[in-house]
Length: 280
Length: 262
Image (cartoon, rainbow over all chains, first blue to last red):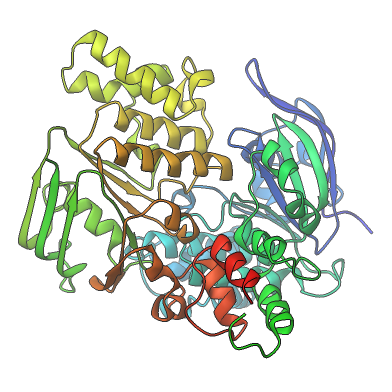
């Protein structure tokens, strides 16, 4: 099977500042992957390379079987849906649904197909009630969801999201989590769902949605392993600029079996272990 | 003595009927950290704009009630969109941080002192000669906070100040908030990082649809009402979801103590 994304020895510099050095990685279809690391580690630059907004100085970025050097960003958008850190800058139409329709229209899908894609994207993010509103009448947090809906409407094989939960409250984060889990196709990664590559500093959100962690450290890929494994290693986390999120910390402090990292799993295990005691 | 007072404040943005804030009263003194929590659109950002004298003065709109501020320094706000706060007048991070105090007309060596201190506090030493427009989102957020601190504000208003920071950077910022309060700064912070609050805040104000729904010590974040509303700490939420009885533990440390005694 063709990988959703493959980087072979990719390097990139801004002038004399080297931002990425010899990064290689592979994402299979339906994989849900966190891209972690300190501020300035090169995460957003990696997104620019994957979406074709920048070209690697060395190495190759493959989106499916396309070399990003051979395709312009608008063509790559057939396969990569992206949301940037400052998503406000991605909205411009008069109504939310028009805005979400822009991508699929620009890619030349049939009118009825566009309508279906827009409806599915708005539905996934529970934005149906706001479909006719002007994007800038929405609060900033919902504008962020609107930009994400635009990426979902492309129904791409790869979704690349830069800090999708910044500025969202917990209820909206849960909404984003549900929508993305649905797109990735929950069980059986590789089952044709979208691969997710998500930059986030919000490790609580990461634990709910993602199961593999890539960590960049000064432009190099410092780690590629299961997210649960990484969150279990407190000392190593800290050397990478990361901290254990509360659920993982709670699991460790209480020595919960299986060391769950998701809130619902931790609650279930806690209930079982506490089993019937009035005040554990 | 620094003191911010909002008395029965109602605020409407231009061309809107529904108030963004309704009948809000709040008093913050120097040395205090007050956290505003609430869902998106509940009014926390608006409250900061009102407290910072940006609403209605800059953004327009109508204000009823009374806002007063006393302090031996300016009041300053860190917006949730740090890239909009760059001066555009500086070619290096050091000059960007100096922009605020320079505009206050401080003497040159005083500016230097304040900038150097702010640079150290935000861990920006390695970036001082960089062009601000080449920074990552999180680096930029730290530069903006440093520029604000260099003005020695008596009242510091922070709107999602850690949104772009990596976890270690966020922890550094939260510690700094406590340090500044210790030096007498009054601080009001709006954040969705509820788990950071028990360690730093003296008081929590829960806003719902522009109104103050509840106010109390950090322990409020483990109360049934806030946990049900998705505004409690993660530990309190897990405890409740497990069907364990209230009172819920606020932090991992509380949970561990509780667990030992079981």
